[in-house]
Length: 141
Image (tube, rainbow, N blue to C red):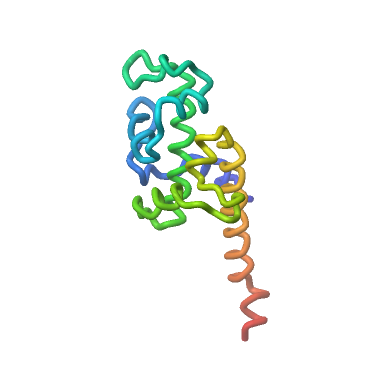
């Protein structure tokens, strides 16, 4: 892995959530159609504390920003197609135990989902590199 790989952990903002001070957590909630009770569970705050104004708990903002970054990583796989990305999150996936990524998030299994996505992306990059290696090109000739 090159040193630049270290700095590729923040994906481009394909989903238009923003980063840092411009981050819009409500957009993450809207894209995934999460209810306040879902956000409460995944951020470990009371349902009554889930809000999207200046009084938003840091735990809510932080968790939604992590989820937004993960959604942006997936959007890269779909060449920036927001609709396909949102559809992927809502579709049951046999590789995830026939559960949708959205439901994994709702059920508190976000970290497992994130690791699954990162491993799949790493494997995809490794396969692409192997297919374009000089040895692979010689074998095809």
